[in-house]
Length: 132
Image (cartoon, rainbow, N blue to C red):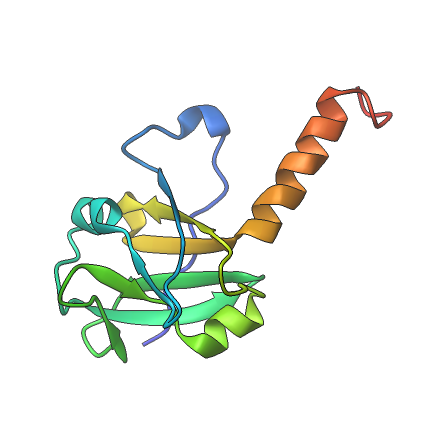
């Protein structure tokens, strides 16, 4: 079964607290993260089956009846080693998780991506570019 499409681009003003939930986590050495609040919002209980793939430097996780992965018994989420490697998620570095509840998706962003986006934004705000 193919992964669901990422949601269409929406205006930032259209995103509400209920539509997009964010959480920072530090993966354990085995690659699992504890994100029980996001899992509850998505309705993913322990042993819930998941598909996990990488796209554009992010890990995309969605529900799948025949998924190869599952939510752990303690409500932890697996981030497979090959996916972490492909997304350059290094041991000891936090990740930003974004739950898109209406689409039953969880997106894992490496901290390096978040830092780059914020640096670009702050450079723009500080007048460091010519696009004012």
